[in-house]
Length: 364
Image (cartoon, rainbow, N blue to C red; front, side, top):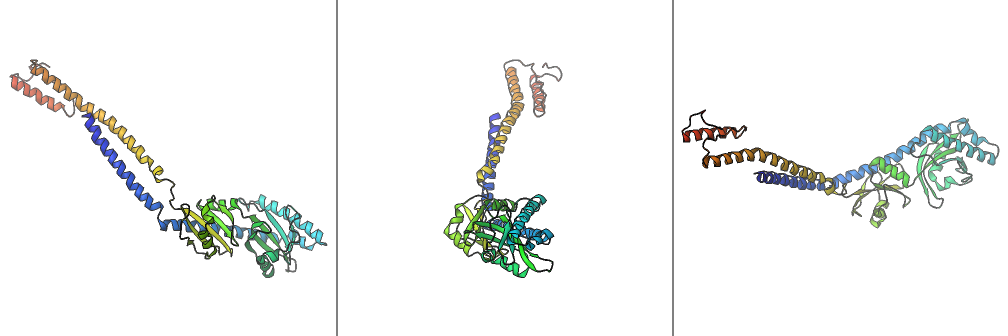
């Protein structure tokens, strides 16, 4: 009996476990590889990364605008000789950079460049070194030239391979006491793999790449060969501003999309979302089999306990009946059992009736 109880209940547990596994596996495969869901995930990834870049630029512009109005910044442009102005620019740039780091405005990405340029967009001095003095920034970066002409703050992605510069650059015009624009204050934070990885972690932890001027300048969330595929590069070159465009083919198990950045003309973000958002569905569903094993253990344990609860009194009744058949006619059953106690009472009454013994005269 124990074996039958264990076999039946164990079979039920196994069948239900297998049905649960295959139903969940099918449902998860559909859910994690659904094209609409993947497109939404890609849109959220690229949108969040663009929003973060834009926010970083706006925060830098606001900080620069406050600094540009300070007397010690304005005084840099009032030095007597070019060398004096250059030395003052470097010294003030060093103080501003230290102030930016200590003040907590740039907690995750510390500024790597604080630069003074004059009214014509020529470099006066930067933090940390005497480099960039005399460089024609307005010619290299027209957006800075426009800011000097209009008097507005602004930001741009400076990615110049010849100059080996990769910055998210923000700038604010500096005015003298007569409210005339005398130059600009520029702040740059690095555009590198570390910066893109931070953006990826904050958005969705998927892989992203930043392309400026037709070349990939940084990759975040890990390298993938998908970003170098010709079809992906061509799609990035055709990227539309503010609209996520899916690449027709998937590469290396990646769902690829591009978006042109509205805040930074000419810049494109490329995102890669795994075709399956779960590396191994079977690995996720292994607890189903763990529960099945636990269920079988409980079935075996319960089968032994239940089998013993029923088998032992039945064996006792069977043994007693054999003794009665073999001549021990005064034997009666005294069995306390919830299910079989009533049966033994009826057997005792039957034996008394067959043997002509009055109730209460038998011996047990």
